[in-house]
Image (tube, rainbow, N blue to C red; front, side, top):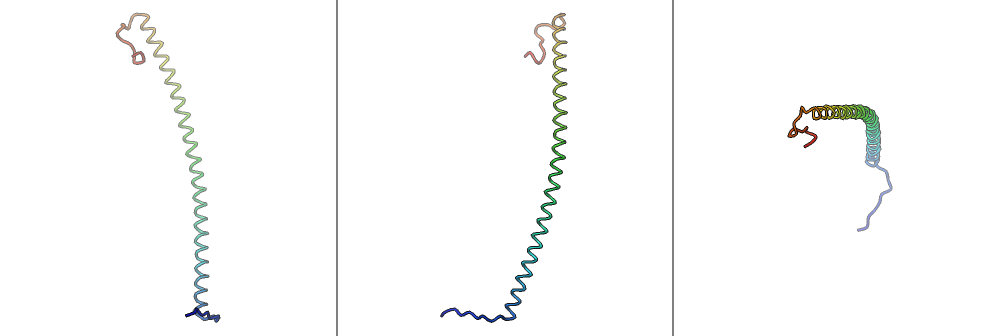
Length: 100
């Protein structure tokens, strides 16, 4: 049985075409709204990332300064320990935690 095509346009064809057109328009609007929201979220994320990076830099700099201070304190303690050893205040069995 061969297929037959009817070239006439019926009300059903017009309703289906209209429904498809409305569906495409709604889908386009939905996609456009999502794209706009995504662009806003990307902009918000960029600003949040920049703020976090500046905070991280501040923490890194603070940590570096603290490390420097600790090194200076350790050097001072070694000098004091050396002076104690030279004056005989420390007996040979005792050595600082650094000398184990």
